[in-house]
Amino acid sequence: MGRLVLNQLSRSFKNVSAVKNVSLTVEDGDFLVLLGPSGCGKTTLLRMIAGLLEPTSGSLELDGTDITTAPSKKRDLAMVFQSYALYPHLSVAKNLAFPLHVRRTDKQEVKKRVEAVAEMVEIGHLLDRKPKELSGGQRQRVAVARALVREPKAFLMDEPLSNLDAKLRTATRQELAGLHKRLGATFIYVTHDQVEAMTMATKIALLNGGQLEQLGTPEELYDKPASVFAAGFLGSPATNLIDAELSTSNGSITVMAPSLEAVLWDGETPQRDVVLGIRPEHLSIHAPGSSAAAPNSGAALRGIVDLSENLGSEQVIYCRVGENRVAVRAPRGQYWGPGNAVVLSADAKNLHLFDRESGRRLE
Ligand code: ATP
Image (cartoon, rainbow, N blue to C red; front, side, top):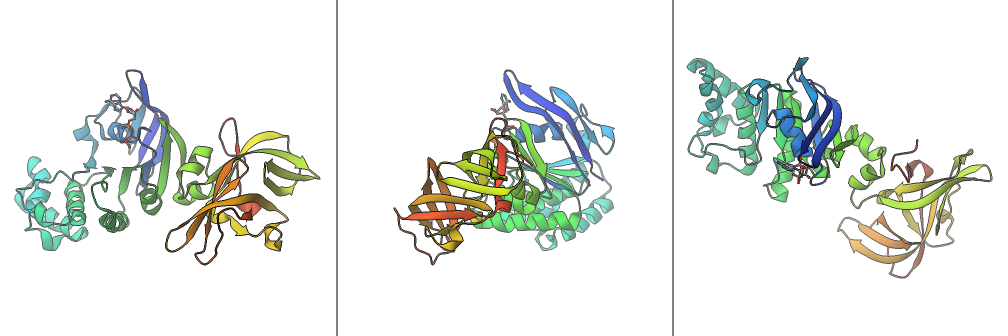
């Protein structure tokens, strides 16, 4: 079991409001990633869940029990720290047994639990080693195993991969996702890294300035960003965001901006200021006048090529469109030289519209 309910949770530090009215439910077995830029309140939120920091207001419930003021030790939650905090002079087996000795668990029982957990995270062959004789990924597994012997209701992790180099981070990320699947346990994981969030999470809570910006599966956040912020945060290169005007023209709903015209579908809409979002992979690049350049429905942007970046497997072409710089992903073989006039087009189904004032998505 490990169902956690956050209800209007807030925390201030003097005049800094670090977390504001966050409400969300983490279901048993979820891998929830708390994602957002530096300073958005991720760690503060995790520390409140762990019981290391008291909320200023709001409440927390674990499996139906109110734990808002319960001390950290009584919460049945296991925090896995960035540094892994393993005892360097103890073997892996003794590191794993440590939390059980503290609880005065029977010797036979300790041995049984340590062996069972070691098998679960596949470190049975490492039990006699010291932490310094392990790779970063193995150390991480030992840290998770040590948390696991206590049979916690959920694992809490704060940027556990940030000390690893890029290659090891990828391997450990995959290992952690696999571990979550095998254990079926609840994980709550803090990161500012969108790739970690996209690849490991079953649910992402995107935070912005202490507030919950969007909660959903990685696919929901990517395919249907709830706000300009969400559209800009997920994706690399970032979503192109262009100020435009939504109105009706000849019975169709259209989006207009300098050097840009998008016809959405038949209908009528009141005129309003919007932000149009288009992901770089949803744009295709054409010579002006080519038939592919003028879709019946969808967007056509007239631009001038600024520069292209070769990423090895593909290229990103940056174009000036009116006042905007628009990024397009394109296959390697195409050549579009700087200064060339081009038309960029996108399907209507791949256009995201946001109200300019509130920043929220328009349905
Ligand atoms: P990062 O990714 O950089 O670790 P974060 O999203 O985890 O950032 P928090 O550490 O939760 O952000 O901080 C949120 C806000 O609260 C920040 O503005 C931070 O400066 C502030 N803050 C955090 N802890 C304290 C504290 N003990 N005293 C005063 N302000 C604090």
